Image (cartoon, rainbow, N blue to C red; front, side, top):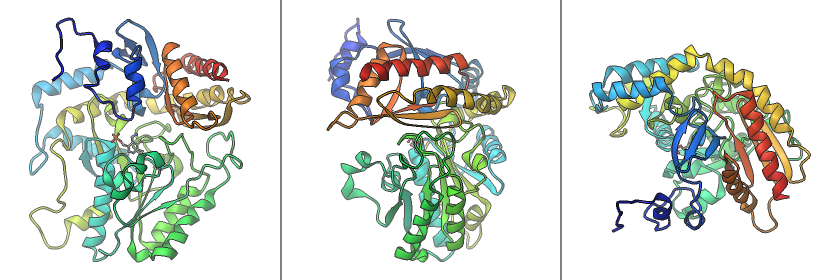
Length: 449
Ligand code: PMP
């Protein structure tokens, strides 16, 4: 057992490895924990124990768009903790969560009116996949068991999400344990036809026809659902080509396949709309959300479900329980209270309008990196963007990691996946902060050359 002395020294304690960090280079961190331990956060900044300030370039992991320590959110959390700190969602509920479901449904596209709560993106994805299976079964089409994901897709780390996901390193170690019957569409990034595109690229809508090929291969009667991130976030902000999502929708409808949008990143404002579905004018059968709904303060996720799907569970012979699925913390009242505060702030501070106003600022800023020797592509939409840097020969990801580490020393908490630097600054950022962030990255890329 690790002994903690009275004069506990956090950086020194990191090196003993009691804490195993997720998705991290643990050995490198142990070797040099300096500036990796965030003691406080306020607005768009983190502060280390020594008081160094770091700009939060990805809003946590895309989850703190209203900034840290928002007084309205802190107040809502405190008040709720004093009023009702927990309530099971099995057979009973509470007013805060019930009202939240209504508010979320109000913001969702027409026809998506029912919210099932979970606690993370991963749980919410697996929930959506299970709803899809249940829906088909209830309609007498239980043979529809196949799930179609997309290369480079990220849908969390549960067995379902991992299986439909398409980021190779996330799958490799567990390749023997994928759920059966999963296939993948190609991703839509093509560095030749759409290099340095701004917003949606005009090339590549026909990649949606991959779905027709999979229908021909497997037969539509075996396919339950297609799940895609409208904008692929974790693999580096891959923006859907104009018309691509519309085409996926048409093909799904034609073959009775459910379309699931994983909006864990795009939901609640990142694209200047409540959902990507609204921004792109395409209505899926289910929307998976998490992250921004609670500004990262208390975990929450969920699935917004169409009337058609919900009603299929609520009709027919009555079982004691319609859907044998759920979590101890589904619809947690603390998370729900925080989510109300988030929606209040978004409305009262006209946050979506602010994101729409900042979109061209980030676009202009980030595309000024074009022309740097090491920059091979730049993409952006809404308040998110990504810059690809040329990998070190024979060591993919090494340059990204080194830029991340140098960023810590220069006041930027960056998110590099492989050799891609992703930006998703808080919605409360000023244009000056956005330019300063990009200028900082410019210096890091130049220094890496
Ligand atoms: N889906 C998408 C699109 C995501 O971006 C993420 C997290 N980055 C997840 C699912 C998984 O969410 P969580 O880490 O909360 O399980």
